[in-house]
Image (tube, rainbow, N blue to C red):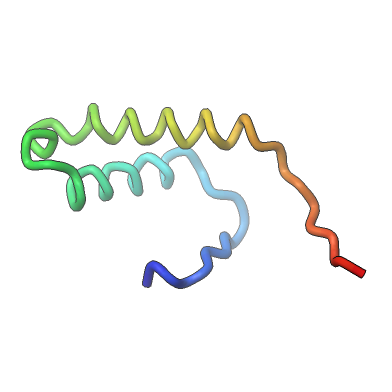
Length: 64
């Protein structure tokens, strides 16, 4: 599953991103962070939004 390429269909909402961050926090987070996964999920969400705002959309060009 980790080798699959993610192709979004349409726009991904902030709610969907937050839910995925929560899933990651509860599934892969350390035991201590699982007691309060919402704060860890919020850290993941903030990171995702910060990284996505730093990288504007680029067009892929074929090498000739």
